[in-house]
Image 1: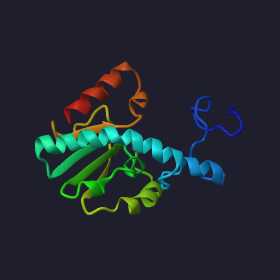
Image 2 (image 1 turned 90 degrees about the horizontal axis):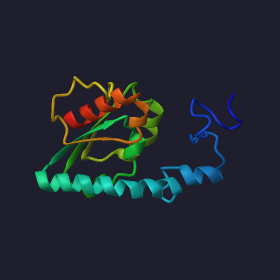
Image 3 (image 1 turned 90 degrees about the vertical axis):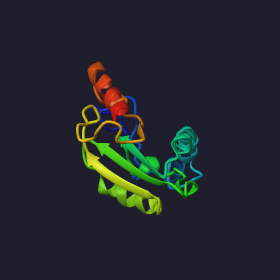
Length: 166
C-alpha cells in the first residue's frame, strides 16, 4: 500500500512529481516552462556540461550538423537547451524509447522547441540492442537517468556498449 500522496512503483522513494493538480506554490518550483523555477535553474546548471561538450565536438569536427541519439529521451529534457546560440549548426536529435513518446509532452514542449536548426525524431527501440543503427551513426549519444532502469549488470553492459557503438 502506498503512503498517502505517493504513487507508482517507486512509492517509497519518490513522491508523485507530475505538475498535474499541484498547488501553485509547488508548481513554481518544478515548472520547466518557467525559467526562474528551481527545477529550471538546476537543469540549466546541469546542461552547462553538455553544452560545453557539444561545443567542443562542433569545433573539433567542424560540424554543420550534429547528430545526437538521446536514449530514453524526452522533449522536456531539451526544453532548456540554448539551440539559438548555435545558429550555424543543425541539430538532429533522435529520441529512442521503449514506447512512443506521449503526445501530451510533445504538445507541451514542441512549441518551445521550434527552431529552424532543430530536427526531432522519435523512435521505439531498446537501448540495450539497437541493430537499426549502424556503427558511428551519431556524433553523440546521451541519456539522462536511464541506466538504472535497464535491468541487471548484463543489460547495463549492453546499454553501455550500444551507447558507445552507435
